[in-house]
Amino acid sequence: MSNETKKVKVVHITKDLIVSGIGTVLMNYTCNLDKERFKTTIIAGTPIADSYRDLCRENGIEIKEIPAKGSSSLKCYMAMWKILKKGKYDIVHIHGNSATITIELLLAKAAGIKVRIAHCHNSTCDHVKVHEILSPIFKRVYTKGYACSDLAGKWMFGNSSYQVLTNGFEINKFLFNQEMRKSIRRELNIEDKFVIGNVARFNNQKNHIFLLDIFKEVAKKNPDAFLFLVGAGPLLEQIQQLIQEHPYKDRILYYGESDYVEILYNAMDMFVLPSKYEGLGIVFVEAQINGLRCVTSDQVPSEVNINNQTKFISFDKDAESWASEVVPYPDDDRQKMSELAYSSAKNYDIADRVEKLERDYLELTSLA
Image 1 (cartoon, rainbow, N blue to C red):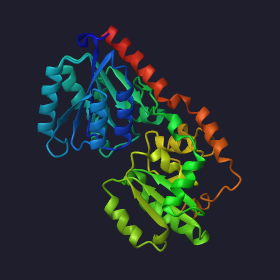
Image 2: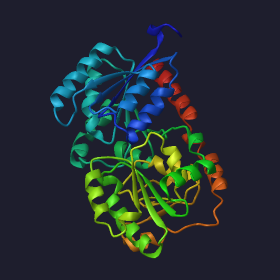
Image 3: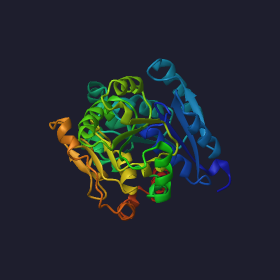
Image 4: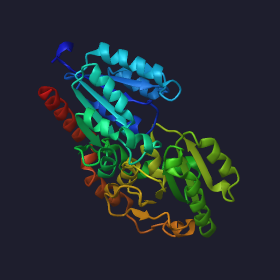
């Protein structure tokens, strides 16, 4: 279908378009959709990552930038309404963590969009009371529900209908590479160290403060232990200050944000992320495909444990108890672990996931 008018017009709505869980999932799906059958637009509040602007430009995806919801909700919704009304879209696909996306759904319904998809990416939110108040309305205005895990689905939709749509990505990019490992560890001057890795946004959910406490206990007992942090976020300055005050600050490496995180996993020996909650936690799947053992909290969905080597620990346990699980595994065959996890991660392969999404889109528009 080369004729633009015959394409299914899909508009995605997201609070912002930063390098984050939702941003990554959204880019992975929209950039891989069949461009002959679908015309994609993204409505996003500020900020918008430059790398995502470039990706959208390369893939023919139109970005409609609107004011940030938090700073000026009225201006945000007015701008959104004008775009939805004018766009004559077949499908609206709204990304969020709670029933607070009800307003977006109502605007889409008022604009005449018959297929209204609500997509949940987490298992709780910052505004639980608002979520509870809006839930009865929310459940009447969405026409299709997606969730990144069952835990996220039960949180967002309760007993109403939804499907699990796992976060798709290019799983082959995350396979372990011995030569890359040597290169990056040499570059970071950690060739003979035990490297505890962490890839996450610096926010309350990811719990970096507790991670620093865990590392303190690990470092006490293991003089070769290093902590390798990758990411950015609103709590970065606070965490950097805590690193400066940390008794083992010389063994904490902050790498920053990276568009090539699949390379950095190779430098690690173990992955530790004590999340307070997760919708899914796709970084755990990425880490396991790279052959890493993972340690996390029991608030993370069990679906991420694709190689049966992930340790889920309660927050009832103290930092020392957590640290006892963060130990080297010298007998691991990293390459073999990587290949086993890869074979168990097929339902995260973006090619498979996009094919499912395309089928759903086409079925939904034929029924609308």
